Image (cartoon, rainbow, N blue to C red; front, side, top):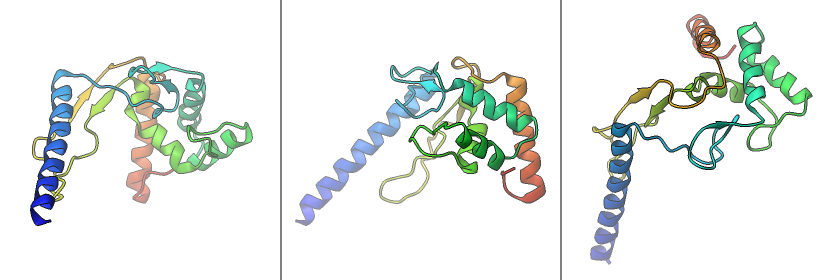
Length: 165
């Protein structure tokens, strides 16, 4: 039994390492394959970012935030219009914040955003590639609007210690 467990553990580690290598290799080459159905405002069925019918909602979120509305007010307004999240749920301030903080809406991408960890030790992957690519795909938001939203989020974070608003 112990031998079988050791073999299974080694196989699991090998599969994990192969997947990490694939992601690192793609990041080095600048290849990002969008996950299907993960990005509100984009159709990613073919692995590329194509703005969809929800792109206008994304624009509204950014415009409202830059023009002074709070995250809670934006979520409330979206709910009043019957708009739903990708999961078909009502909007919450936290969901609005995630959209405002996500660089995909300005056309950029960050590779390996979440740090991979060793499956056994749980330690961070030393070979992680943190690469940011500008103008990776079609933007929904203009860069000046994106930057204004990021400045407001940062100012709130500095003033109150968290990034709501």
